[in-house]
Image (cartoon, rainbow, N blue to C red; front, side, top):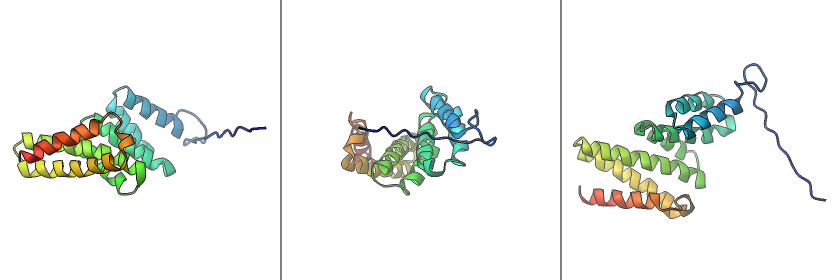
Amino acid sequence: MAGILVMVVFGCGPEGGLGPSSFQSQYNAARTALESGRYARAIGGYTRLLEQAGPLAARVRLELAHSYLRDNQFAAASQQARRLATTLDGPDKAAALAVQATADHELGLAALAAGDRAKGASFLRQADAAMKTVVDNHPDLDPLGALAARRASIAVRLRGL
């Protein structure tokens, strides 16, 4: 007879219960905010969760980085994702590198638009290196080719500098 293993995860808030301040409730609120485009709210929620995330800290930090990225806060997104990528390996590292690369690409484009070729080229090279790692080692994270296309765009920009 096959059994079914059911695991229930309880998060306790300051009151010790499962009320609205529980980790799971706070995580769900931050995730909902991210998915519904309320990025400032998501950023605040994930930032607060980092203090109590424990073994889920990497996931929370990745979602925080993604929230910054979606909110066009590219420097913060790059910083969070880069920090995370140095502590992970495998597909988790690749996911962080994808966020970092996208943020660095946008930072590079902004620097170029502001007339800073050296800074722009530096960000574009960082973005290219991170995207290369993702595309070469984890193509499953780029099923539609968006990162590969972004990388091709970066190569064109770098050749023109």
